Amino acid sequence: MSTPEEAGQREEGEYGRAAKRLKTEETEADEREEGEEELEEGEDSDSGSLPGNGESATDNRARWSASQFGAGLRDNGEDSHRISPSPVVHVRGLCEAVVEADLIDALEKFGPICYVMMMPFKRQALVEFSAVESADRCVSCGAKEPVYIAGQQAYFNYSTSKRITRPTNADNPNSGNKVLLLSIQNPLYPITTDVLYTVCNPIGSVLRIVIFKRNGIQAMVEFESVQCAQKAKAALNGADIYAGCCTLKIEYARPTRLNVIKNDNESWDYTKPYLVRRDRGKGRQRQAILGEHPSSYSDNGYGPPCPLLPLPGNSRYKLTSLDVPDMVSYPLPQSSSSYSGHAPSSVAMVSGLHPSKMNCTRIFNLFCLYGNIEKVKFMKSVPGTALVEMGDEYAVDRAITHLNSIKVFGKRLNVCVSKQHAVIPSQVFELEDGSSSYKDFAMTRNNRFSSAGQASKNIIQPPSAVLHYYNVPPCISQDHLLRLCTEHDLPGFVKFKMFDAKPSSKTISGLLEFDSKTEAVEVLTVLNHYQIRIPKLHHCSPDTALQSF
Image (cartoon, rainbow, N blue to C red; front, side, top):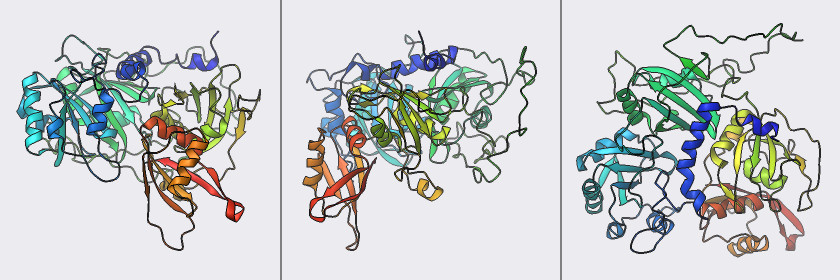
């Protein structure tokens, strides 16, 4: 018998199922292994280890990764041929503003390129050449002399995969589709059909758009032709819709045509401008006591419109001034009621929680990095599942974007939007660790988005292997922090850095690096806001804070 939450997750229909299939393909390697990053994102999972030397892809990535403390990317030219030659090249060290077209421009001199997968948050990409010889020329040249992409030196190595996983036509490496699947990462602002049309139509004629939400915000955009879709993918893949956020990751979609039944903020058929929603048998509406709702987001609610990034400077994709200006902007909508396929909700549902190691406080420690937390409640009818009421629906979207599918205490979290609009403290029971299944955090001082000034200091980014600690008493040393991890049965850090502080400062801060992202997430979940007791002074220090860095 399905719960209301499970029923809500089936509402996406055809488009939701398509997104789920794509997500499964992209993460199938992670689900086979215990570690977090055995394979590079998007690679086929049938090459889980390096041929010939028995090393795992994790070992290879560790050998090629840059130091988190400013050492920079290393030139590993001598190691570049340890991996068996492959037509797929792993590109690292990309700048933030790079898009797919920049990679094609810089690397097509080595040979024809048949597919590119961007990994914008990692500043990496996978490039599949038509032939191994082309990939070999790329890797060899990069080992001998600098190769620049969008003005920044990039680094190359063979991928452990022979082919990049595609969501469509697996047998034809050169296949395309006029429908693109757009995943919007770090969506700090509403994404509507008007926003996506403004972004995509200057590059190629857009016919239809459908926006839906499952694992974050996703959309399908149908273009007039395959050529228009190819051009849009190259020009926009890896770009930011708004400066510093709403990053586009673009793949070819499975459907070859979109079916739109209404024109609104979530779906639009531009070939049928008069297509409107018909409410059949709706009858008389309930009378509203105060009439229409107030415009809670006035002209000044969001501030000035956020600028879109310029279109790529490449002449193949840049249009003339008569077609579109170099810099375009779109005013944010006055209401967020149609932000997604779901009715907007400030409640997230989290499943896959460890039954004995997770409680309300630890959920708060993890989710508070992405928005204020009002209430947390574990569901008695669904073990390992909790509802998290956050400050607004945008905080929920940020939490989904960054926390969905991460591993915590050996279990993979599933974070999605709840159909509930508030957390009600009903059926309170005792968790395995003895704590309450419900807790109200509305008045806690540890919420980090309580004012505009406070919120502006937060760095919104995905979990990483490096934690930023602060508000720690100056008398606490590296050994103290290591003992703290040991006392709580947590993995210790492998690198420690303390920032210089003023002599009069009452607290210190610094960085802790762990062997993996999973270890860092577990330490943050347990020790974030932990009160460090100072025996000599017989009192507790302020709450020590942690965040991914």
